[in-house]
Image (cartoon, rainbow, N blue to C red; front, side, top):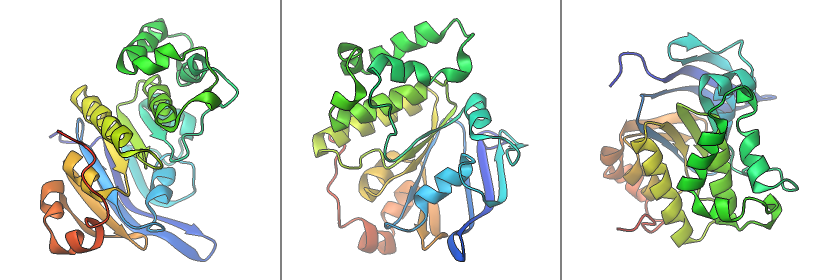
Length: 245
């Protein structure tokens, strides 16, 4: 483990008017690790990710590689290596798969390796190569998630924030997506994973946080939380294992 976490968020709070959606949350992500945040709908998981990306105003302290991000725009955070794959994927439906991918490298326009990285994404997601000229709107749900991941990888991230990557996908596709996430970790990309499928998330992650009504109620190594009776009773009875053998 590195001496300085890749991402360190301390006492992050976000309010929508008088409603505190996130209250005093602290999370840390080490290089090359998967950290998951689980919790019920409305617990504040997505709000936390948006705050970390600078897409929502927040209180508290967010550091990336030890440096404060308070004054940095979302675009500047992406250029530093921090990239969000949002829950709704937010693809450009009327643009081709290839153009969506190239937009992921918008801050790298002068980087000669963009073409090489595009080939790397196609190698990781062969279906995207097959559909490179198709409009994003014509893709299946699983293909759209692959495109969202591929577009994020075109930014050359050191840390991916993944918001509900399994949402709305069939179990076999979910298994494939989680295998891809595991492979990304093996390639050196750290991941902060927000996921309602708690069982699959805890099997995949190194460390986990449980968010309840905007605050961290439990945290610890993912394997330990997966065996915690409180987690088992509340979160692990809803989903079957989707990762496969």
